[in-house]
Length: 311
Ligand code: SF4
Ligand code: SF4
Image (tube, rainbow, N blue to C red; front, side, top):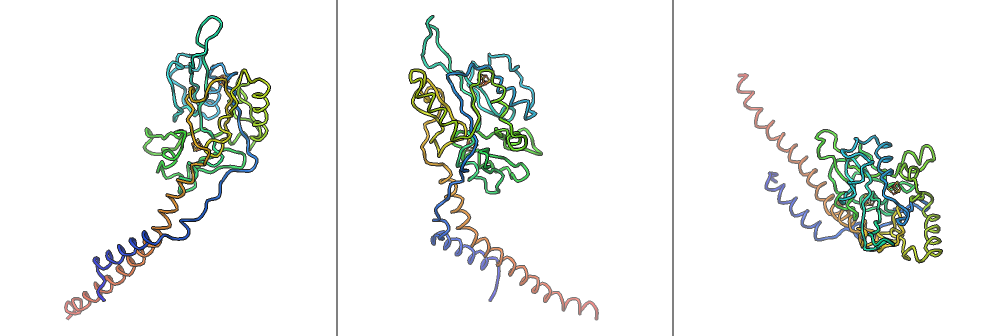
């Protein structure tokens, strides 16, 4: 049988087609959620936050991020809505929802934005090299040594959080809040933002416990709070939780389903790998056969020439 490029592509193409038609059993497997049983969390009380940006400053310091162009004391940055980026893993935004004080002035509400450290994170499921992992303490941890820069995590994140070092051509990284993973693990500490907050707007503790605290505050002061904890159920639950006196949709919070997003990311991933591993393996085997066969042919063809030269 003649093995040539046409034969190779023909067989390979047939196998790819077959693999796409016959769906492997693994692609239908039911996924197991990755949520740890008793993680930490942070409760952000939006009725308490005064928008001082001290949390931004503390985050900048503990992560050794570059100094900002506008000083942390300059609150004019609150005039624009900002997103976390490669030099600021958390930002505070100011919102006006129409509430007035006794002098008829608009009352601002401040919202701290950062990675939500989802219980069952879409970014973790989307990362095909395991650079993002959900830790038992609740942190969604990034390992830059494993990251291959595909940025699937950025596409998958329902909160549009991960940023990328586009300006760094040599060692670009995905950037997002770390939940102060090292501080919690190594020294039993708290996230720097929760420590620094001068008005204790951020409460750090076991997620199950801070949900109880949030429920208690809502129950004890129904005039102050809406009866909702944002992050308790959204996308399967998040480690950052919020309580508020204003409707969350007026504060830039996304209306998300309670179903974890990873289901979609993993279905695509499982499909790709389940469908393509078999044909890719076959391509590799066929490639090996072709290489060996061609080498034999070249060797066979070249032998008589050498004999002629020697005569
Ligand atoms: S430090 Fe506290 S009060 Fe100040 S902006 Fe951050 S969360 Fe709000
Ligand atoms: S908010 Fe986005 S980046 Fe953070 S854990 Fe959730 S999916 Fe991942």
